[in-house]
Length: 288
Image (tube, rainbow, N blue to C red; front, side, top):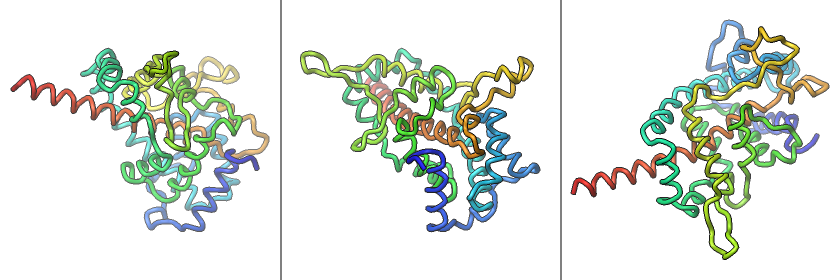
């Protein structure tokens, strides 16, 4: 079994879950759906139609205990619901501040070194946020712990890009993992004279990512499959990463996208807090 593959995630999370046990709230699915597991899977809107069908078929063969499987899918739905409710906060911030002012703040107020300090996130922080902020249970936590490790070593999986849409793809490609600083982006570049300056390409990706946190959709779906016909655009196309596999197995593409989204929000929250603090201090100085 290749290390960091989807099968590796399944085995690692199963081991962690069965040896660590489950909390009381994981004993039964936290969200009821009249269509059962298939209904829960179908309600994850960023899963494309064929991908959802593959996930349901794979779930029937999964080595996970049924209670673990159902709890995981219930948490996937619940976490997305809470993430969607928070999107308005990022939209309101960007509507008030604007991209030009935010760029100026990052370039002049914080500078390359200041932004570099913000763009650091330990792997454990993703699962901490899921647990403390979104109240995810032990089952989903064990999955995401393995998924975050998979994201950190994503190049080793040889999988194709997870992201959908040009801006998400740019962020995925710009995101990297450093064993000392955790998840980060190359926002600082060295000049020929030894000084450092802001990497404008990375800065633009960061700004666009923050802008899109308050967009129309939490995560976009891929374009419709040509095999499905033009009249099925709403359903979206197939998840190639799943369909290429000979045997039915779960794909953690959607979970990896959620992990990267949480990383982007973690950085955005810090930047927003620093800018609000700066503006408050400026208002106080003007008033005095």
